[in-house]
Image (cartoon, rainbow over all chains, first blue to last red; front, side, top):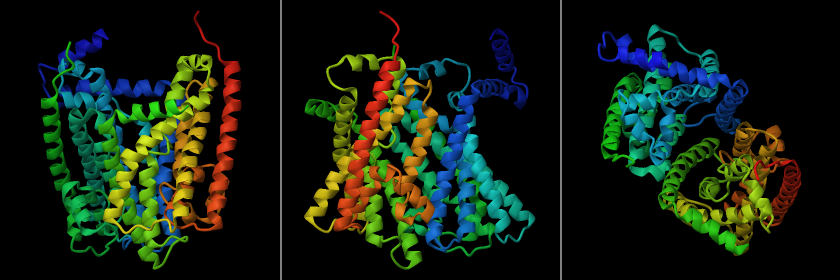
Length: 284
Length: 261
């Protein structure tokens, strides 16, 4: 502990390069990861659990396509690609910042104050306060789905499409992380009403898995321009598979996912700021 | 007993903001799911698995409305009491622990139905065209079926919680239970939409008795003699699971050792 504290202090004031500045976070995250790997049986059960969750999500898509050929203009392979991209983005975000969901517990227990006295920014502390390695199960299901979808679909490959997939995964993760962070900021106001924000995070993730054409127009506008989950999977899928877009989903919009991610993060930062400003401490 | 039901009702009515938050989430998921089933039925061109568009939408919204009423997942108390040894106190009381917790859960179901279920249903009815039970008789059977679903879901969860007598951590088993019940109770999609073999598994499991059956009655898909069949199925599962719960509870009681004087 002593040497870790020492290295922490050493890393702070000089703040030479970026690597130095990130060192404390690396140390914390490594410790969290090590801790989770200690209880093997429990870790394996948890992973099987998240694989199960991923498989049920997949079962939903599969059962629908057992009954119909097309849903919202997509066939099964295209729907599988939407499922895969949205689940990859969501599971990565969930792994990195999904634990912001437990913020109300910290607030109620008065433990948030402890975060305030430490010499690191509040948000990065919360983000690194945990890393849910068990979520790797759902991620694995999504990756398998992605590989299957990309190999069975008739993709006309180009360098641009490879770049688009990479950009999509990064932006998707960023968009979902922003939703979790915005939700976290709002928890400071709700505390008991944590489920309010679930409709934004989990509801957004559920909406991201669908062909946007199943929704009525007002909802499509909402999922594209307010809570931008259409950028996570549906729009890129149109571009990757050369499908025709429509007036609310022109195919070029797929390339705008970094813009959507940036906007989402701006909103998330504002929410977080408002939340932490609002927080008065636990007293005592 | 009634007193315990009322206590459960009042206990859970304290968290008003949480109820409102739950209602919001149910409504958001209701809108998304209803959009999906409507698109699917539109794409198929006709009813799927016996569900017309209004029936399928009613199925989705009743499902969201009853999600808080039927306790499919949120059952932690008994597990914690077994682990901490507090269950010993329950054994000392003059009432059977299973009945006590069942009464509390019925009260919880009541407040959730009134404060969370009915408003969700109202939102669904305003936004979408829902099918309704065709006769007053069907409404009554539907209400009874909801009550039975609450009991079956409680009884199943109670058994899973009691496994803590033998296992240190039942989280894994709870997760498996959660995944299977979510899929097979019809929460995501109606069981009649499943491929044949998956449907057979569902038909022989207790999960449809926890949600699918009341939803089928309230969305008007089932009429006549079918109503009797599904209610009978629920009664059988309620009796079976409650009885099994008693057996497990007794076995756990013999196994329990509590430290301290």
